[in-house]
Image (cartoon, rainbow, N blue to C red; front, side, top):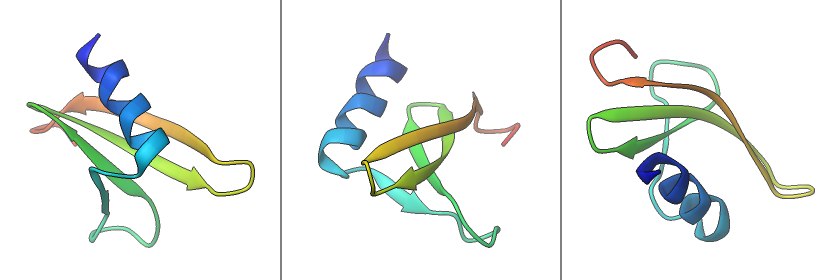
Length: 58
């Protein structure tokens, strides 16, 4: 439930979104010990989650 709330917050406000430095494109969202890797589409304003895993596996 915590993961869903954080992703919704980021989708609505953009706060908590970090650019992936290791990859050519994409973003990450920190959620405690977990990370959500995602792509952002500004038209029509979608957040597409690629993967949610523990931070040691991402």
